[in-house]
Image 1 (cartoon, protein in one colour):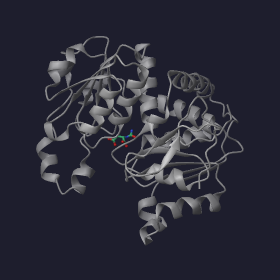
Image 2 (image 1 turned 60 degrees about the vertical axis):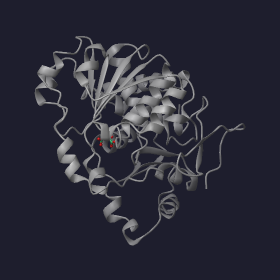
Image 3 (image 1 turned 90 degrees about the vertical axis):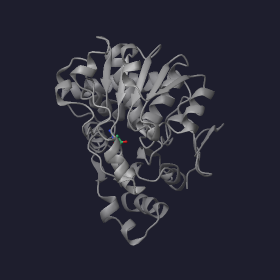
Length: 343
Ligand code: NCD
């Protein structure tokens, strides 16, 4: 069971039930990172970016660091992943972590299949591995909060359900800083499956924290709109949010176009595959669409892409979705070091 580490604890509560975690409040050490709402100030973001810059030097030098040499890291994924899984594992290995227990197939091969609960799995892993930190991806919206509640070590979310992907938001913001040289005063359009996608929910809240004057446009088919609760939560933070189905209406203005795929697995889950096939292909970023965009903007995508960005756009200097991933490696190195208290 988690014992909070600060003297004066600020709590961030799960929107789903009573589980809560501590806000970062200027100190990452020993804290979970399961919700972007745990970040409370710009200086915390600056700190992650500052450490990430040091991490970039380690990666460039091609020499393994030693910050995590005495750390034991568990990484458990209950959903498919390429980038998040490999970058967390690589982040630990780049920092000299020799005890990385990384399991990709939890949904198929762990005792979950026999009916074990998530709290039991988490508490067991702490015993079987003697770990210091657990990175987890799970399909339940509330999973990371629940794991954090039952774990005695910090839980870092690598994506939970349809609601949160906090480390993705951090790497996305880092990419914007790297590519545009600023994270304030931005006009950002988020496109695609805003209903089921989790990256857009975490990133929009992070943008709201950085600058209340960020202009956000949510572009999606009516049925895949950003949930009302998310929009009103952003507006209550002072952000202006514009919703439309028409990408070309907003594209000429934006600094960042953040594209997402339709989350087929959730349509399947709801028995709505027909709807998926109806909507799929409605938005496709190609050369013609890019002619409407400014020369100094960037196109981002958390990936995987299915068909929403044509391959020829990869050659457009405005495409940032592959460089985005390198930010994933260095910001995750930074977060692991900060949370384990090694920097
Ligand atoms: C995203 C995710 O898992 O939410 N992928 C990622 O982590 N880069 C996006 C997605 O699956 O569409």
